[in-house]
Image (cartoon, rainbow, N blue to C red; front, side, top):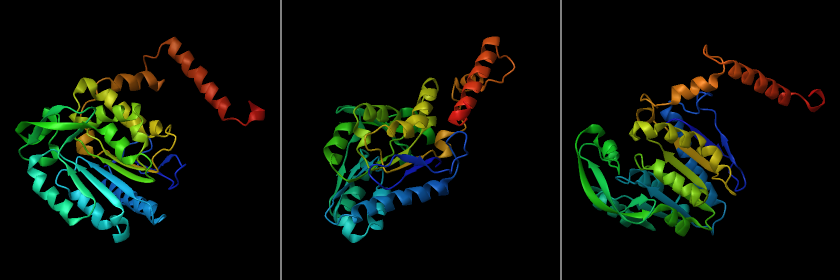
Length: 296
């Protein structure tokens, strides 16, 4: 759990980074920092609803698993805010039907949708991990991290449509996305449809290590560019928390990353004359741009 991007708690504010990362990569191995930021996200969502006693809020828990996150969310909210919060839990694993049904009875306005979130409505092969339910995934590779898996057929929904249906016009809307590697297909879809601009509060758990090696560089680029991309929304999320837990995102190869780093370094031993000229030219350009206007 690593990088956190938090924003000022006003609808027009754009996201501003909180410096808990290492300052160079945007990633930091700090579980406690993300836990703290996640609690701040929930507190900000509650403040959003608390500011207007007549307002209603919506939470989408996409990848609800056993419902622990949803339960902790609802129990942390004040009774007044909880009554005005509609919670949808997206979770296709049959093993959790009963426990999620219990949550729908325990709290008002809570609904379990036994479907997978995807880019369209269809039938998908979903892989159930036999040892660790948290690794159940649309990816067989991801589901088998801790041993064998079982394949089942599940229904999917177009998450972009669900976001538009549930969040449009909502002043307080929280999206939690934990889909075990499917985020690299879902997030581009949510961006191009504009649906990812609808949440006012956003939590994304990333799983780079579940991505096949040839696709990993593009996946990392998506992760690192997301805060800046969201900042182009007419109304960016007020609070945005990214979870880059080390065991899910570090210590595996990202083919092409070393080569790109070398090309962009500008000081390696094999730099061509053209490269050296480029380094000098752009270095001078940036130095001039940093000077006060009268000295340029």
